[in-house]
Length: 362
Image 1 (cartoon, rainbow, N blue to C red):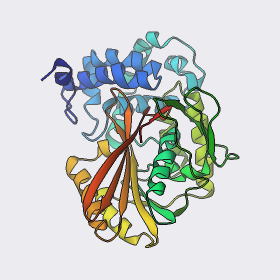
Image 2: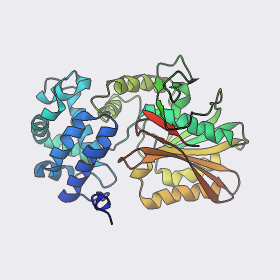
Image 3: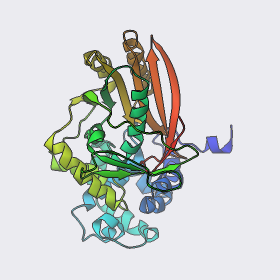
């Protein structure tokens, strides 16, 4: 076993030593990938602080401790701009250097320990990173190119508030590899306009004019109600403070969702998927998808998802688009095709965890 492998934290282990590894890992790999400078600076300091690690032990085994801790603090700060800590949060108007934030962060957390522990025990990381749709669109186009049906019957696993279920109500810009203007797609008049950088050696294939959707449904353990201001506030709290544009994009996507909310069924997706696949229109292609959701599902639950798709494929072809990543390097986009109970898998792309860049491989 290499030294790099030994340094990996164990999922669900809430011992101080393992939590320290989790925060060091987050600060070294995950935060830099997405430009989270404040959390990059705070994470290694949290990893060395016994009191903070003791508090973070309240995080449920299925949830990522750094995201929940930083989200809980951000949630409390959103209406407390007078706090000294707020001076380090760009979305709250702060402009102080992140490297100087730890003492103010520690003081705030310990002072608000009861409220923060309550949030750590009861809240879940349910981010809706709308920018990830820049990776979903070409993956759906890839599926559409390999199916005989006219439209997709979509089932999202873990959609949170369902903002990524509305992917075809946004506008997209996909530049060419040399950075010059490339393809535009979607609703170019939408208040949500997304752009990603293309990397690698292959230009993105020509996208179809439209990708028809016959049905869409989300399966979510605890759906986020876009009409609930507190629920929306929690979504905002999970966005990194430096990502001011993401805060604006979230507001615009929420406005679209409030006008016509997507259908989200509350419950365990691993148990509900089989029924959702059976209910899909017979003349549409079955396509389940998940974006950074499977990592929160226990292994046996993921196996139930695969089993449901295998069972459905006894009658018709089924697809499963998955965007996941370790957080150490990049995320990966896989398209699984099920037919007759058998699965074939294609690694169609690599991407930034937040959709900032896309490397097309297929």
